[in-house]
Image (cartoon, rainbow, N blue to C red; front, side, top):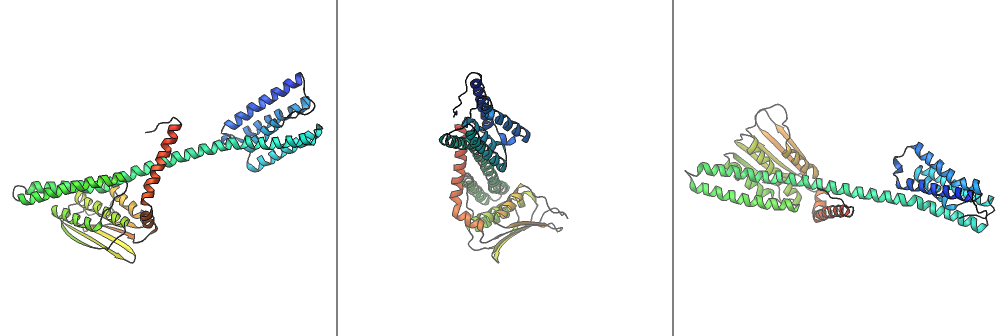
Amino acid sequence: MAFPRTPRGLGLAGDIAAMLALLAVTIWVTAADTRRWPASRRWLVLLAQMLLTYMPVGISGSLFSGCAACLAGSALLLLPLWAGAALFAAVIASMLLTAQALVASAYETAVCLLTTLVFGLVVFVLPRLAWFIGSAREGWRDAATFAVINERMRFARDLHDLLGYSLSAIAVKAEFASQVAATEPDRARDELSEVLAIARLALTDMRTVADGFHRLSLSREVNSAASLLAAADIDVRAEIDCGTLDELLDTAFATVLRELVTNVLRHSRARHCVITGSTDCGSVTLRVANDGVACSASAPSRGNGLRNLTNRMAALGGTLSIRSGRDGWFEVLAQAPLASEETAQHSAGRDHYAQTLDNVIADSLSLGNREGLTGS
């Protein structure tokens, strides 16, 4: 907006040059990530914009509200909130004083102030909106990445805990069947039938792992573990009296038992194994102890399997403790509360978890496709 004293000749050229230069600086400010700029650069840019904004007043006695709007918006972008708001108000006030000094009418003064205010806010809001959109996209990418990582870790953990047991059972029973095939063909046939049943169970476990959630029963796992240990010539004493457990607790403790029985077969020369389970004072306790472990005064190191079990118990608000005695016995004690916030949330939101995971990954892939990105 130009006021009565319209510039001519050299004055008009100066005004146009100042406006174009101010427009270029403003575009640069709004397009750049000024949050990373040092304070010295921000103030130098603002000083340059001040000079270009008020230059037409000194050259030709003209005032352009659009130029002041660029300065006011840049002040909000480049300075901290309190300093930017103060400079923004100062620019608005300077427009009022300058318009009065140039003998502008009340209508022209009001239009000048309103234009400066509105377009100054536009200069500030549009870059901020672009930054917020970019931050939201980065947040969705991070959320999708974390979701994929968590899903991969869950898949690897479940494969280790579930299929490791089945494969160990198949190996033990197949080896036992080969040993008695010549002398006890009927028993060898029974063992091979159990190998076939375990292989089918492993296939079922594989499918449930892929689906995201699996259901195991502690009572059934105890019977299976006792049969497997007996086939390995290990004397087993199993006493489980846990009653009916929540689905999540039942699956977690059955998984713990699977891993511990697998460890007995793989990492010890056990001849005796004790498996006990009970509920007391609002908690479930599972104890698995076996002999045949090399005597050591130090605590055993935790492999991936025991770390996985520790994480499972911690997710339920429980604990997993390990004790290795000088008498060659190795004991693992798993405990978890019967009712916890985690188990309640799991029972209520199992399907919601899977749906949320699918939505996050789908949204991320859709966002990447729109931006022409590909990922592996």
